[in-house]
Length: 129
Image (cartoon, rainbow, N blue to C red; front, side, top):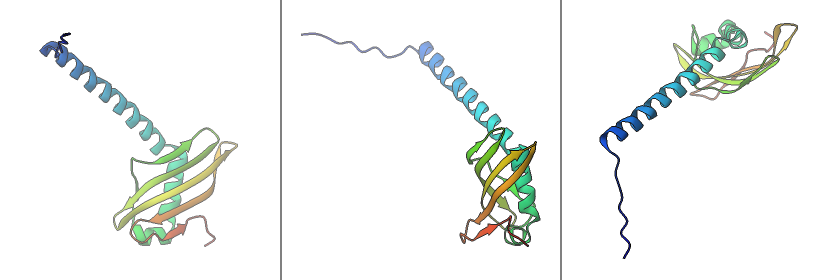
């Protein structure tokens, strides 16, 4: 009969493995937090936020000032942006869809839609007023 002996980890090796896990988690979280912060602070996102805050319908529904949340989807590169951002204000929350292209260093918004979380109401921020 073959005997298989299973060895557990020694206290020192378990401690080293746990510390490595924690360090890797902190590094990964730091990188993600940094990238998200860069996107939130980008000129295309800040411009979209300013457009939304100036819209009377968005201001009446969500209130001002508006804040961008952390968990968003999409991408931004040097020439285009296609991103969905969580948005909140004193009266409510929702999300904002941003589509933009950069021409000669200036962001031109093709679509800025704010969807109100509770009602699902869609507000086209770029509509003619």
